[in-house]
Length: 153
Image (cartoon, rainbow, N blue to C red):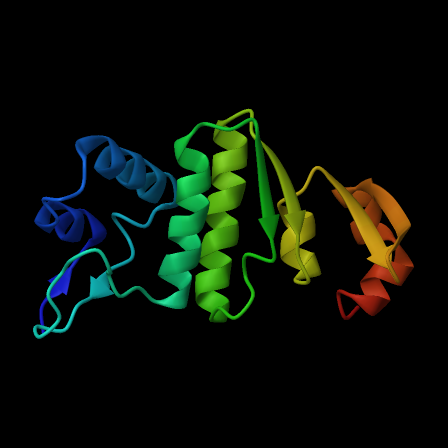
């Protein structure tokens, strides 16, 4: 079984339009998928419209698709759910980098509170569907309720 990256697989798909290919590659590059993550395709699977990707690669590609159109707002609902911790860490690192390099607003819903606070300028803590706390990341990190309930301190 050989390794193929996303760009190689898309090159194999002659039925895709060049615009679609550029959009997908642009989004994949933005999140770091085209150069870091590799997808493995079994030799017996003909590369066509379906490309086997891991859960982390699927999540990165979904984020990349959202970034490909250069939005002003990117809404993410638990981007780390179901992912290995190292993959989730990679996604958060890329989101922090993307946010720092652009004027992009990210609305993030996430249960990994430490990572969410690290990547946020401002946060809201919801309890039973209501805003229980709000503030900048430094204020929330310093709050004893947050430290005890969510950060294990």
